[in-house]
Length: 235
Image (cartoon, rainbow, N blue to C red):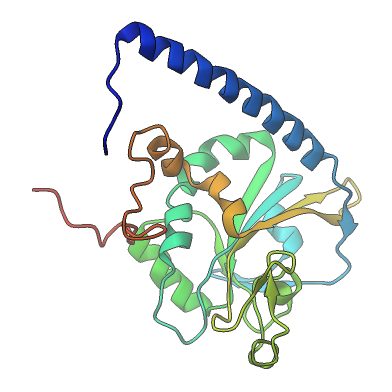
């Protein structure tokens, strides 16, 4: 890095100029969030059944006594030993956040296709407390655009992030889906986001983005990222 060194007065002038841009962006984000809330809904007609540590559960069960539900589609593929560092990084933020958003009528669960025994193994290793269940061989992951059959990948028909990315290798990807339940118990899908859209949930990035070196990805995107129990221990 080769920073420009200036007087405090010149620094303050530059900071105020940037502040004007930050305020403009904040107002634009407020407008975008309001537009997101105004998106139309579509009704979930299919009955989804999942495997949980305490038995079978349905999409309705995941709401508990709340009317809103956020799902994180965690990349944990059946038969694979790989634990996605990016998904894990995102999930490291969830338990702290849940203390607050669950008080604002939002339930949470993570869902993967891996068997529940494997999910519980990873969950215990990482020290997570949030609900994490298995969609197994069901349609849920496929219906919400985060899992792809071998045939579709081979034929070039597997698309992700609203047809922006063609998937050829990975049978599973990641994302977030949001649902709401009305007074009659009907469930509606209101929103899903994928790929860089999930950065909204990566709070540590927001801290790094305040610094001169930013995300410090000198070896490529998220190059320094590891499972949190794989970082070298501080001396």
